[in-house]
Image (cartoon, rainbow, N blue to C red; front, top):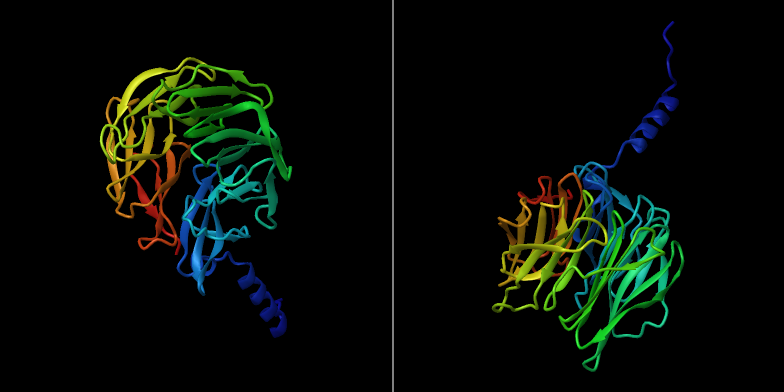
Length: 364
């Protein structure tokens, strides 16, 4: 017997089928969308916070992908305006549901995949200051914050329990000086580096985020450490000189390795000097990339043999910033070039061969 579905029921079923169909990039990506920051939790799973024109201002939108950027879905965006001072709006996902976003001054977090966002306060932080990095590991949140003004500054490590709305300074983790800076990295253990005036550098490691061990710094005096996570049990770091050395628009750089977390760093892999260092990431102990800006152009200097030889990719002539350089796994890396409200706009680039070749990801 042939079953016949009543016309009304058939219409309802058709409507439900259409509603359940996955949204296409054209329906979820706002017109004029430009990426501001990206964060990936795996080679194929990533998130992009961007902005699109809406009247006289820019409105945020958060996108996610599980197939390396082939398709995008819309998530709840944080209430974070695009700063007038061109501060980087940095997005950090530490899982499918937990993320942080900061414009250097304000911090918000979600623990439900973007459905709701809540402010995070920094105890004792007095402007002007800049929060350069925030992440979560081993059930705790860690952030690096630099205050400055009147020719004197300080950089401190802040921390708090995962989900806490308040972060506090960690006793003993601070440096002061005319110029101060810091970095932290997770993956295979926690690393914290704080420095001042290209002379003083402190370095700690931890496997649980609670007990820290002071270790010899990755870089010699006169250079600044940029940290990558532990790769195949080895620790990789980049040591950069002060900007403009040996000549304007350049930076002396060396790749350094430690055999294990907390081990002594060594190595003499000289990297190209073109551009001012903007970021650093390592896909493996021998495969690493430096992001640099110089002469109004963006460069990605990459090595696959531990620093013996390098290739350079010229991304664009946006010449404003290269941010969020990272390698989330299996030779896959990402970086954001430019800023949403700049004349040249911005773009997201991705590599799947450890930085040898880069291509732009499209959003629609």
